[in-house]
Length: 537
Ligand code: GLU
Image (cartoon, rainbow, N blue to C red; front, side):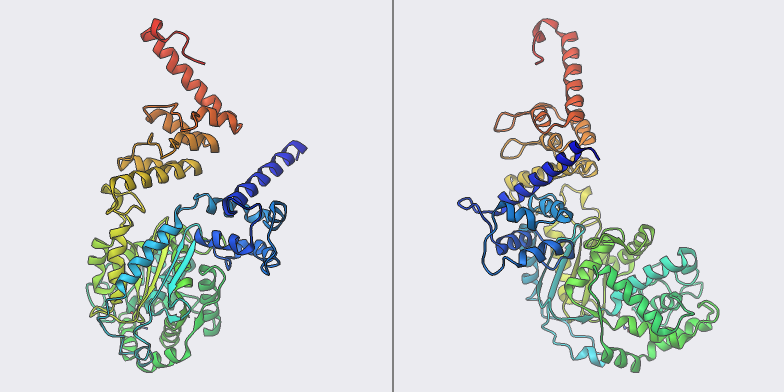
């Protein structure tokens, strides 16, 4: 590496640190405290328990007794590995740019739904019937690992049927789609989750109902001892949850096993129809399935798991791939069509996101490419879904354009349809500028397909072109130059995108823009040489 590059890297790194420092410190102070740093990060969804900033947290803990940090101490405490993450979070450059506002709206929906106290806790598994019906928790994790949780988020609960999509995904990754679907269908059953019924081929209808989930359990390392099979799935849950270990509720397991006549009946019915792979031990398979349903976690962990699915199988907290993308695609498709028991069609229609509920009152929602949401409230409606969970889902898509097909209407992602025009404009420009700064051409295309003017300016007159120029996003600049009516808008300080590109040393962008200006000039001259003479400069 040449010394120039080393210097440039050092310069950039120091610059990033300075930006972060300035964003955190109060205007009247030249120092920051450890708690101000943690508070600023937390407001942006980066929690001090987040392993990605572990080193920084370790270094900062020395200052927690009260000593404040000047810039040098701060720069030292900030580890190189996570400076970019911290910087992106504080500059609104993560997938949920205004996390504080997002959290505020989510909590409003959550608290509003607390009033829904109808329904009953599941009675058919005695241990579940004893759970406090008032418990209520929310967890959220974005695909960039921004997290928050609320309510009874320290309480753990049983995953129950929310293990079904995970077991399905594990089976797909282990034995492949063809083998899995030679034993289980992929059509909604239109029947209750534990009904004694198979499809026309004598197979369970899909992996999201009991028969299909028992079948998927039979496909997971069937020739290994049960203890190893359990260890294996626990390792997958842990990886999906970003390294935090999930638990196990032995009394639920025993209680479930002791009252499982219907699940035994389903397994024998499937064996009678030759649905299982040859040599399947159905007693072991059922045991394994009951164990999977008895895994426990809290809403925070479940949100990270849902976010790993939203992120195409890569855990956002560790960047570790847990499932193949194809597996996640298949899994989300079936969650979308079959994840909410007999309410699946209605849920897909009105809420429009892949989700899975369980009789413990668990609900896991996946907003692909954005976030995972976990809600837990034990009272169930007649169809077996959490009453508050369903109400929460309905309002969630009222407030945020999370419905899979919402982008075909005039909403933009994360925009409250009840906002005033001014707020809408502000939100749209924030999204547009943030997408331009991170070089997300797909998002810019989507916004402009939804009617957002790619040339719109924010309060300071900054446009997507300014941001893309500053950050050196060549393809975004090229796209915007073709679509904006004004290619050299001035911000409130009088700077054009070309000025920004020059100032930031973005030579490629400067070249693109100068070429474009020269072309425009030549064209203008060809049409009216007299009027345009001498304008380029
Ligand atoms: N362990 C439950 C059963 O097999 C799961 C049911 C559910 O959550 O849908 O009956």
